[in-house]
Length: 483
Ligand code: SAM
Ligand code: SF4
Image (cartoon, rainbow, N blue to C red):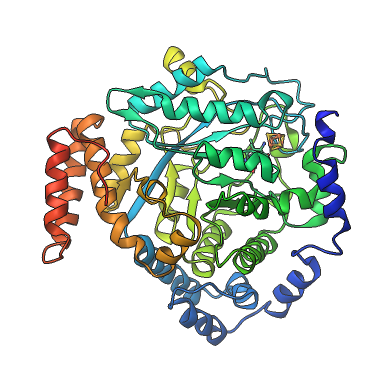
């Protein structure tokens, strides 16, 4: 059987379904119906959103179509408030690790596509993975997302081996405690193997929910060309017991308003079919230029910075319990502007070429633009410093996943805002570790101030003594402590 035929049986089954859960006409009907909502319409939706419950499509359509400055500001204010209520003022940090850029697909927008002759292909060996992880952990990283193309060389057994290698690589105080995955859709059997090697979140971005656009940018005859194989990838993940799922859209392929509705319908589908378990995270990359990939230079539906801010706030208001990830594809300026709109995770110290962490050490520069460009190339320490300056707590926490709070369990605590009770103290502990082990003196001073300010907020709280004692233990050399 050829690589491209590997899921042909499953494809046939999916092709027999009379329809899928994305109804393009219905989405446009809802958006058109609410083309010009009144202030009252918007405020009615905001009243419901205040209760921190997932919105219905017609309510999200009202927020998307709102063009009134005054109530858009009210949307931004509430998005900030909800993020504070669900997660507190902590921002989770991670860095991607590119394992392979070999790919049999031919997505028009991606530098890894098979017909791109302008890049040299590479799949890291286990020794090279170890080397990358050592550099990342020596900078202070604790969480990563492993990124793979879809190729015969990087099938499931290779992926499992690479994940095991990441977890088993240790340096002094350094280790990766949570490895998320961004890879192609997999079968239930393959996903069970990922579960066995303890992956964190399983991310598969739909890229575009619009059927016709999907076919245009993902050529027939490739695995990725099958819309429903991708659309139902998270159903298979849930069936395999991989219950922290990451959705995403590549913004710029089609109208952003449609795509936000698509993300909401996907969420509703998952909640309805898997005991209320919606996406653990949502990502919203905008297309950035990739080498040898003219399509990526001028995307037809490029999203303006203003609309980008709005779509993030709409996502926070519509799916309040979900982690929102804003990556270093965005500039520092844009990231600073969207963090207060409900973003809960960012990457920093990011290198996105295959083997780029090792390469950047040698050449003292960041070699990118292979798959796409990063705009925010500040070091991890620099971003930690600035996030502390904004009064937020940088967090490397991995405790929910390691204490088994995933899927349904995580949703229960997130939906009832109890994540706050874990998130803030655990963020404080992991920041303390970072400040002792990796921070520059300037960042250390700023970070200690942030820790002190947050500690004061716990005065009179039953957890106060435990938090003080745990911080002392870290000061005295213990690591990886958590509530
Ligand atoms: N091969 C897997 C797949 O396609 O799902 C995962 C790896 S792919 C490199 C990860 C993500 O990168 C894609 O899902 C897509 O959203 C994003 N991406 C691809 N080309 C991009 C570009 N030019 N700019 C920004 N993001 C891009
Ligand atoms: Fe391959 Fe993924 Fe890039 Fe498509 S987006 S060419 S599947 S790496």
